[in-house]
Length: 176
Image (cartoon, rainbow, N blue to C red):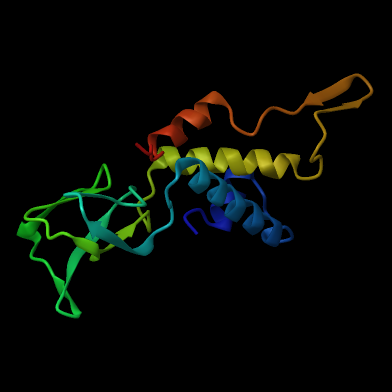
């Protein structure tokens, strides 16, 4: 997980192990929610995608921290790895541009790693911690908008404030 239970506990000053299962569930849910919002995987995964040879540009499913790209072409009943001089990787955009395209149906295979393993940007880590913290604080009051006890009250905010949403926007993939 890109944010550990111990990091969460340190951030929120939790000193016991009593709630580790709940924390793990909240962190997992928060990361999944952010991945869904961003249309990207945040935690490093190995990806394999097939493409038709009909356009010189292949738009990858994931666009965060793309590494270890390998492009193969199906030729005479087997996959043949292309030399890296035969294509260009635009990792920040998640685009592979093929030189000398060979037309065909699902005749290109792209393998790559996407997401973060160890070097998660600090702004993203903090934003996920803030989101997870909101989920943590609201876990026993789900569905309640306001709580009052005598003269004291709490108005629960939305899970995403503008500050956190802006950070997630930096990691969002926009489909054309």
